[in-house]
Length: 75
Image (cartoon, rainbow, N blue to C red; front, side, top):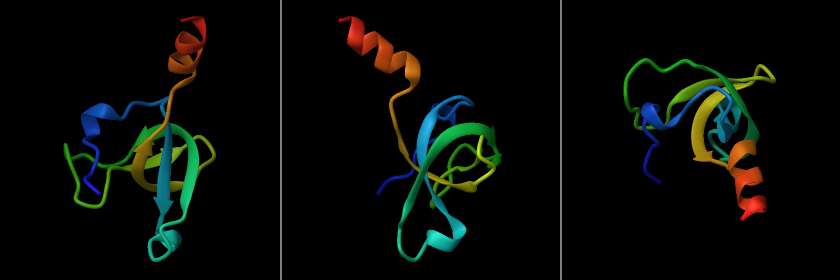
């Protein structure tokens, strides 16, 4: 799985992350990005973020944002 670049991740974006304790299992946690913690443009294991829930992990998947979902409902 290729890593998502930092430029594609913004606060307010809904994502799935892997928490440190879930790295072995690959269990994903869904949430909304509050802070981007990785400073480099890319990272081989994924960009580290803090979710609004306080959970910290590496982004594995970007989900639809609320705005994207409402736009698709209108069309």
